[in-house]
Image (tube, rainbow, N blue to C red):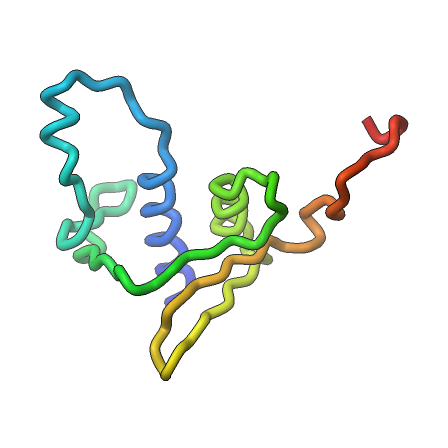
Amino acid sequence: MQKAGATFVAKRIADYVMAPPKPRDDEEVEAESDLDLDGQMIEDDDGQPLGLANRLDQIAVYVVGSRRANHQATLQQCLDDPNSRVFFQHQDGRLVGLIYVPDPSQSRPSGDAIRADEI
């Protein structure tokens, strides 16, 4: 149950962070330049409150993939796929990083070249 709740909150925040920007006028840009979820109430899709968001500045988020991959899409794939893995990086007993690894059976083998008959 805790993993499902954490996955839901992480997916909700990732959806918010990775959403394409909407066209805005100058006043909206100034008003939202300080937009931060820290301390804000997070609600589910039905509008039910889940709790307050707390920003963790000292935790890095990594996603495993090739250099040319769309890293945001890979992160979204990891959040959506229950077979993806999350590793926790610790330093001096503190959590300092989350490393998301996509399910290897869902990814293409890495390589810089493909054969003509694979197209």
